[in-house]
Image 1 (cartoon, rainbow, N blue to C red):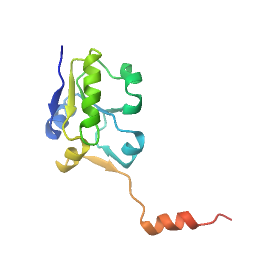
Image 2: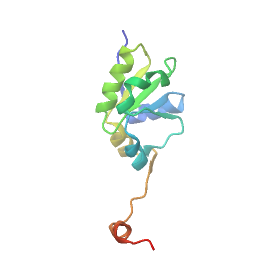
Image 3: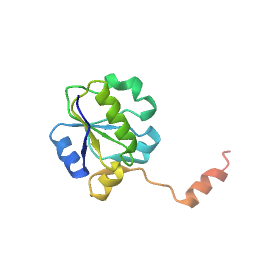
Image 4: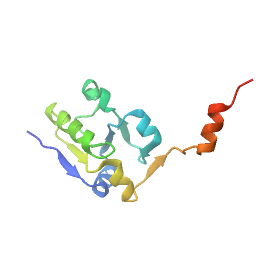
Length: 124
C-alpha cells in the first residue's frame, strides 16, 4: 500500500514545474482570496472531495494543498486509500508556500471606508 509523502513548498513547486498537479482542497471562497500562483492546478474543495475523486488523475503525481496542511493531509489519505499511488501532501499549505516567496495571487481587499460606503450607499 502506498503512503503519503510530505513535501515542503520548494520541493512542491519544483515538482509542479516538472509536471505534478497541484490539487487545492480549500473552499472556493478561500481560493478567491488567495490562490497558488501556478497555472496547472485543480480545485477540489474538501466539502465535495469524497464525491469528486474521479476528477483527480490516478496516473499523475499529485500534490494536495490547503491553508495549513491539515485538510490536505486528510484528503491525501483518502486518495491513497482509493488507490492513488503518487500522492504528496504540501506541508504547512499555502502559509509555507507564501513564506517561501512562491507565487500567489491575491484578491485586493477593499478599504474599510470603501466597505462602509457600499453598506450605506442607497441606489436611486
